Image (cartoon, rainbow, N blue to C red):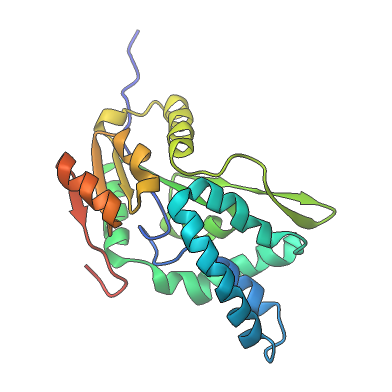
Amino acid sequence: MSVEEKKTAAFFDVDGTIVSTTIVHYYVQFRSSLLPSFFRPFWIAWFALKVVYYFFLDRVSRTRFNQVFYRNYRGLNAEVVKQLAGEQFETYVRSKLFPAALDHIREHQNRGDLVVLVTGSLDFIIEPLAIYLQADAALTVQLEEAHGKFTGELTTPPLSEVEKVRAIQTFVEQYNVDLAASYAYGDSRADLPMLECVGKPIAVNPSKGLRQVAIESGWEISEWTVGGG
C-alpha cells in the first residue's frame, strides 16, 4: 500500500506580516463608521487614551491583550459589523497589503504549497482577505454571539503564541503536512512558537525581540512595505 506524500505548507501571520494593520485598526474603522460624523473626532480622541493601555498590555501578553480588546465589541450588532467587514476590505484593507507578501503567496501557490493564514484576528474580518488571496485555509478566532449581538468574549482561546502552534498541529494532522519542509512568516514575538515549529521560518518586519531571535537563529529576515519591497 502506497504512503500518501506529505504536503508542504506556508503559514502566514496576517497583521504586520501580510497587511499593515492591527486588530485595533479594524475596530476603529468599524466603530467610527457607526457614529455620527460630528462625534467621530471626540470618540477617536477618547479611544486613543485606551490605546495607550492596550499598547502596554500587549507588551506583557498578546493573548491577554486580545482577550481584553475584543470586549470592545460587546453589544454591537453582529450582522451589521460583519457586513461592514466586507466593505472595509475593499475600502481599507486592500490598500494596506504588502506587495511582497502577495508575491510570496503566489510563489508558494505556483509551487503547489498550501497557503494558510494563522491569525488572532476575527473570522469575519479575515474571510474577505482569505478569498482574495485564494488561501487554502484561515485559522482565526470567533466572537460569541447572543440575541444577534456580540458578547465581547471569544469562543476559543486567543490565537496567539502557543495557541497558533496548536491550531497548526491540528491542520497538519488533517492535511498530512510536513512541518520540517514547511514555511512560516511572522512579525512579532507572539509568532515565535509558530516560527519555531517549521523548518523554514521567515521573520517579516520583525519586532526588536523577534529580530534578535532571528539573528541568533540564522533565520531569514525580510522587510516588506506597502509601497513594495
